[in-house]
Amino acid sequence: MRTIHLMQLVCGNPGKVARSFEAMLRNDLNGLSVTCSLTLTSWISVTVVGSEEQVAADVLVKQYGELRDARPGDIVRAWLAEINEDGIALDTGCKRVSVPCVRLEPFGRGTVEQIASRFGLIHCMPLQIRLVGEFDAEFTKNQIDVLWRWKKGTDRINVNNASRAQIHAALKRSRHSRDVYAIERLGILEHSIICKKGTDAPGLVPRIGPYLESELACVRGGLNAR
Image 1 (cartoon, one colour):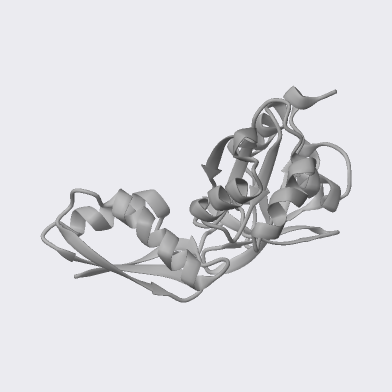
Image 2 (cartoon, rainbow, N blue to C red; image 1 turned 90 degrees about the vertical axis):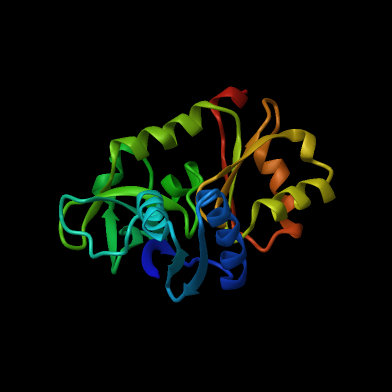
């Protein structure tokens, strides 16, 4: 028996997190001779039992990382916790760190709130950062490039606290499935709805919003520029 404490924040409804992560585990460990169970606190722990439990543990650590206290210089995945006038706070490992205003310059002009809105940043969104100091961080070049690629594509709607099935159901009930190209997974319950060219994300939000208990944020893409 092996128990792995994963660097995977429980963000949103714990029941939904458990159900969605169990489905992800089945995919991650498909074909391995193991059974697994979850324990949810602030983070996710997975216990694996079986003849290939060491292989399964290695797969999970590679995929999600093992819970640890990040140190200056480390590049880690963190989860957006708060947006305020001083910067963007994120949960990473065993502590909260902050990306101050001065390190948001790669995203262009504006207040922290304006930058967060421009790139569709929402609570619980996983983002890649590098620790500069004990509680001080910056976004990695890779993460900055990803967010700018979003701005160059079609419109997007970022969603938290919703499974892929719930998003599909909301699109179907609102009769807007045909306006969406794909649903990209960002985290366990965090997704990015990629709109088809010509679809206006701000116009779509009030149509699908009533069917989701989620925070929704738009990214206006360059391909939809008028």
